Amino acid sequence: MPKDFNMSKEVIVDHETVLITEERGSAVVLTLNRPKAMNSLNFELLNALKDAVDALQYRSDIRTVILTGAGERAFCAGADLKERATLSQDEVKKFILTIRNVLTSIQHLNKPVISAVNGIALGGGTELALASDIRIASESAVMGLTETRLAIIPGGGGTQRLPRIIGVAKAKELIFTGRRVDAQEALNIGLVNKICNPENLMDECMAMANMIAETGPIAVEMAKYAINHGIETDLATGLAIESNAYRVTIPTEDRVEGLTAFREKRKPVYKGK
Image (cartoon, rainbow, N blue to C red; front, side, top):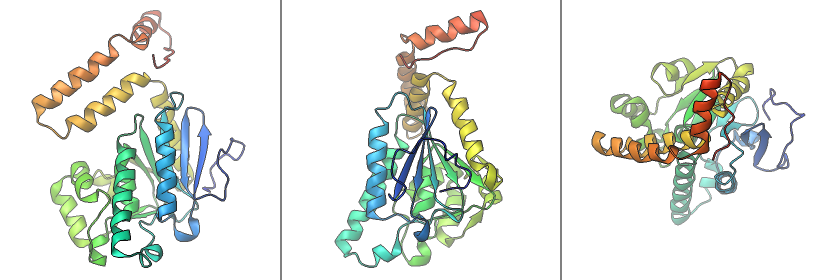
């Protein structure tokens, strides 16, 4: 577990499992817990992630999800190549479909997801970060879609999400060469939102989560929906999606509370209603 975790917080899942779930206020921290395998993704970990994400979509008390890796070396080194070597071609196809579906469920989770990239994030590790809404990286982080160096291509959505985030030309460069980038370059090209000292990584992520917790829950959910779906369309369709998402917020108690709190010069108390 990352050294900056507060061990006095309640740990919901046993430490020996492949995924540790920890509640910290209105945030949930999901820690990939395979440090000896550099937190690489195998079927067991992917299924654990799927179950966690499926459960979190119904938790109205949880405002953000933070993804990170156990230990200090790796966020996620991608697919578990030792497991991959034992799989048949059909099982490899199943693995790729599984990772793609899990990352899509993370992308469309009805609350913001922050990746705390605490070290090496290659292949599927970078794809996991790309499926998140916000990426904050340690200065020791190394990222990249390196699959072409193994004579394959990114299969967890990397060929689609990376160009949407950093632009087509730069995405082609990184995917075609399989080149790794350090934290500063990742920041420069827009691959991550922010970088910080390793010891401050979780604090920075929690600060972001706390800022999100001050906003209206329904508003954030609708904003994420509008952005995710609108970006895939032409401008006119995107504006229509935004308009429909805005309408959802109009009859809410939170909208009235926001206006009232502004008038009364106090912080609003949102209830997600």
